Length: 220
Length: 254
Image 1 (cartoon, helix red, strand yellow):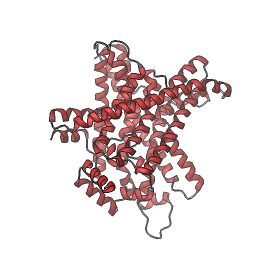
Image 2 (spheres, one colour):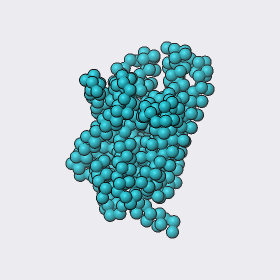
Image 3 (cartoon, rainbow over the protein chains, first blue to last red):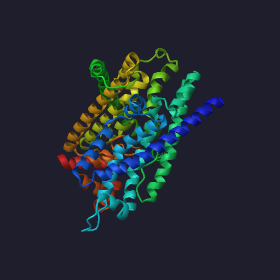
Image 4 (cartoon, rainbow over the protein chains, first blue to last red):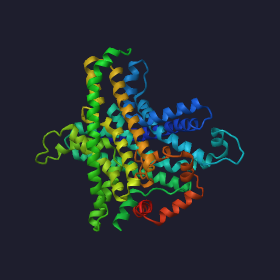
């Protein structure tokens, strides 16, 4: 293992974290918009939001990423590659989280007789409660997002998996590199779920068992 | 570069052949996942701790690993092991089916353990749809699915938009069809259960139940902290999942 390899691995790790967090933040913004639009009083807005959610769910991340990176420039729209990858992840994750937002808004009922729209209800009336209701399902999504971020390596964005491939190209120790990749993802996943479990507990939810919990339960 | 319909019609047949390969990989990968999942479930509930712990650890690690990493492992990694008979380059489709099978076995294992068709069938449908949406990743190991075909066509003609758009549309349309079928099945059997894949954000198992059935009732039941949700949670904590399922089934059929 040379310092070049370590540098590559570190760079890939950083890009993976950037893609995951960027995809999450953009995805949440899309999801809040789509989730509220699905509760809108206007039929057209609701229909558009429904189609958006269905399409985001049906379109694989890789298909979106490749289309943004290859087809868009061909029709004259140029995106930064990292941003194109982030956008693909965000669209994908928003397809699933839009319904989390919608359900959370629906589940927090307004006072009887209060006739206010979903957006205002979310902002003014039950915001914190809705946020609390969303944390738990979001936690699951974020870990999925971490894994999905590997896909953009196919579109040549240098995140963790691609770093692994580049290192692989330079030597013949295939198994060592794959063990390193596995360790990288498991480590990121464990860190991420530790933070998320703390957050879920903070809002009074029941966090899902961690890797160690499961293994410990099996050892009993 | 503008859209050329003649060219689009020309590349449609090879792209459809790619879709056939994609569907073949989906079915084969899913069957392998069912088999391996049954194995994981059996080992994970073994009486011997020395068997149980490695099985559970393997499942948990596989769940936290991107599918792509597993695909590379089987495609590039197996020949590198230097085992007799594995020295040759592995067939891409075979490596893809192995990777898909192992990855999804980590999720189907729970379905076997729950042993309840009422929960099992929707969960399996969710896994199948999620597996199909992972098929495009096979392009990374050169399986001849639509994206790979599109790449070949682009290299020949230097036209980009048509091939990649049609390949993407084939995936999206097939996935829409699968999702619709799934909803029909869920209407019959109920939404996918909480505990099948909720753990670490399995692509569909957790969130999709929000989409199925009556959203208002369902959401209130799950998220609002109202009375029913609390009652359900208490019940869940008292009985381990598989026991609960067995009881529910007896109540339903008997």
